Image (cartoon, rainbow over all chains, first blue to last red; front, side, top):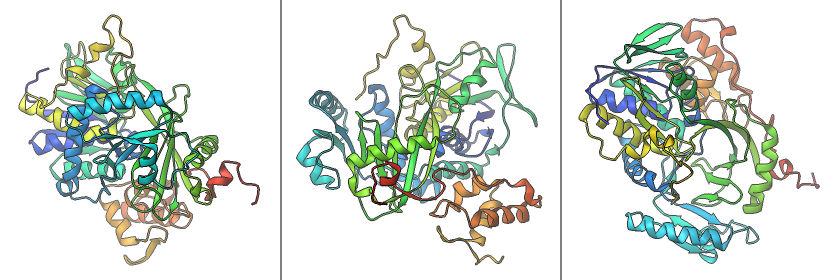
Length: 381
Length: 91
C-alpha cells in the first residue's frame, strides 16, 4: 500500500475508527472532515462491552491488539479524559478439556510473541474469582493480567473532541448518500447538505460501509449481526477480571461504578436493526446466573443492542478500494473494533502521512476474500 | 434553572454540566445521555429526560417539540435478574 499525502480527507463514520483516525490525521496537520449519519459513537463504538484485550485474538490481530493496549495506557493523559481504563485482567473460561488444549497451544504461541498470558486450573480460577459458581461449566481458563476494559463512549468522544480541538470538522446527523468518483478517482462525498470535496475518503462506517461501498461498485464481504448487552444497578465488587465463557457465548465485566455489564452472543440472522429484543434478556439472565448466582437479586437497569460488521474470517479490512483511487476502507472489524480503533487510527495516519505503517496492513487486504479456496483459515489465539 | 440545579439525581448531574455538554455541539437527548450519562441511572431518565430537552431547546433556540425523548430501553423498570430468568417463584 502506498499513498501521497492527502490535502483534504473525508472520513465517513464517527465511531472509534473514524474518530481516532481524524485525531491522528489532524494532529499531523491534515485537513479532515468527519461525516456521520447520526452522532459520535452511535454504532458499535457506543454499544460494545468496553473490553480491551490481547489474549484470545486471531494470530494476525495480535500485534495490533498489543500496540493498541500501549496506546490505551496513555490515552487518558493524551486526550484529557477519564476513560475508566483499568487493566483488570481477562479470564477466558474453558468448558471442557478440548478447549483447554486449544488454549494451551495458543497461550504458548502468544507468550512467545511477548504477551503475558497463562493457563489457570479450575482451582486457580476460583481463587481469582470466588464469586463464580463451582457448579458452572468451567474446567480452567487462560488469563492475561494486562487485559482490561474502559468506557467506550468516553474514549470515542475523547478522540472526537481532541480531533475537533486540532481543527478537524465534524458534520453530525449528516448521512453520506454516495461516494463521488470521477475518472476512477474519488472526488468526495454527496450529502443532503451538498457535496464535500476530498482527495481521499476513508470509509469507516462499520456495517453501513456495505451499502456505501456499493455506491461505487465495491462489494464488501460484511454481514451485520446484532449483539445485546445488559447493565445492572451498581453493586459491591463481584469479580475483578473481564470474564468470557466461549461455550455459552457469555461475557461480563464490572464497570468502575459497580454496574455489571453482561453480554450473550446468540446466533441470529443478519440485520441492520439495533433495536434491543427484550426476549434476549431472559436468555442472558439465565446464563449469567449459572456463573454468578449471587447476582440473582441484582436489578437490570437497561439493555441495548449494537451491530458487529462481520467478515468471513472475522478480521477487519484495511485496504484501498479496488478500482476507486483514493478510497480507503477501514471496516469489517467483526466485533473487535473498539479495542483496535486507536491503533487503526495511528496506522492509517502512518500510511497516509509517513508513507509507512509500523505494522503490516497486508494481512487485512480485501483481496484475501477473493483468493481461491478461501475459508475460515485464520487462526485464533 | 440555574447551573447548580441537579438535573439527573441518579448520576448527580447539574444543569451547568448538561449546558456545557450541549455547547460542545450535542443536539439530541440521546447524545446528551451518552455524553453526560443523564438518564442512564436507575430511573432511566424519567425525571431528567424532559429537563434535558428543555435545556437543549434553550441552548439551541429551537422549539421543545424538536427534541424527542431518548430511546427507551427494556426493561421498563429495573427488574431482578432472577425474575427475568424466570427462576424466581418467591416473588
